[in-house]
Image 1: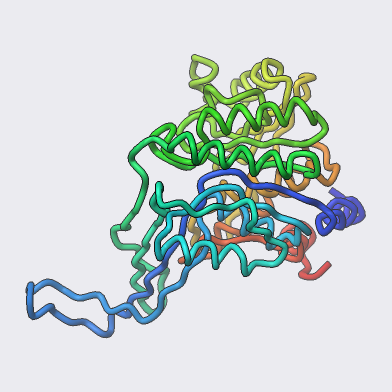
Image 2: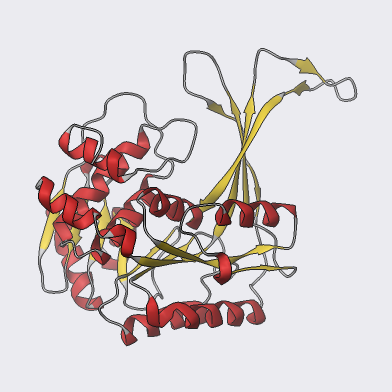
Length: 342
């Protein structure tokens, strides 16, 4: 990618309007100081003294955070939180970010706020040590009334949006935002406005999703193909088959091997991962890839250009330790061209 092309693509970001539909969670980091040890008088168990609490949107919120960092002009999160303290904190974290409009986000007493609580022990001179995480999730199906309220919010932005990301983050199907009703509405939007990139990602499987732009890993691709896909050639062949079936591009992340992208016309590309420069934390890398692929496509990038930007973003994020990181346009510039600032 040339510098001129980089500037053309990223220069369009401030004028774009993107929606992120999916499972937003609250990431709570508890920073623990191991130099302040105690033992509980009541239980005799060790006490971890928390010296700082940091909150930020997670899951689909991590994708949103990346889009904010990239300077996208208008961002609309569509999802839900519970009518609880964690929900209040999540809505506050969403709303205070530049360009984010929370009118499509709802709070409801019929759901808990999806929350990841992450205790981190900070040892001098080495990366933070994460203790066992404490999760709050919903274990019952999302009520139809909630799903219908979400589709009504999608109807509002559908005529005036430049790209959509659909992010399914829950472990049990139909317990989060991306229910059958919501998937059907997003599928209809992709049909109504075929010029709009609609990128889908799921922590379980994209099987059963409408034909959107799929982003997945090699193991998920193998399940779709019904056969092992281990070599790069195998992955490229299976990706093209799926892209042709969907009539939309497909992106396959390959960890240290980079990313493969295929178009419905049979075009296929591979971009390698960038060399590591020290300790890494892979949390959030996939979300950075999803965000950068989508916004680049919305800005008019071709598949290989979007993939190159996504790999630069992933490389930047994995070197941010003890947090779920993001990458700005200036940081992408540094990754690709060796200088900060654009």
